[in-house]
Image (cartoon, helix red, strand yellow):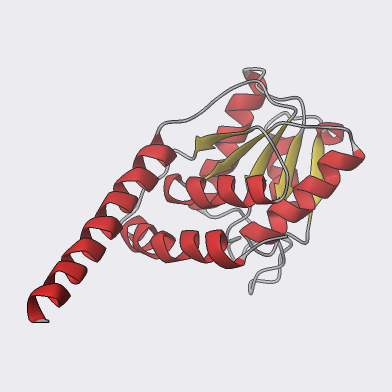
Length: 189
């Protein structure tokens, strides 16, 4: 019995480790293709109303890809954080300041989490007769975001990661293992 428990624990640790490697590789190897729309997932807005460094890096990636012609429209998705700012509106303002035309930016202020962003994006894309999307977020969040978008009925889904790393990302990567399987098993439309 003791030997069986050791094998089970070892198997679970190997599965966990392998999945973290897969999440990391999937997140760092951008899958850039021309898509109908880019989708920037929200994150913290500072108390002075500026995007946090993490959010700004996502927005900078969207600006880069927009200017390179990977998509002609951008959906910015987020909610109102504890700081009191609508993330999506702050994101739109930032993109306009960076030269993107206002009419190219669609605001989703109800994207309170990845699942809701996927659902809202699907509805927006359906209304506008769009099919393909490029998701832009942190590297560790890419796999779960693509899963949520596929579950919402969006296909194909491409990806690009923000060029921003901090030590906190290791904790976030650890957490993504559990979040991914939660979405896989329990988050269905």
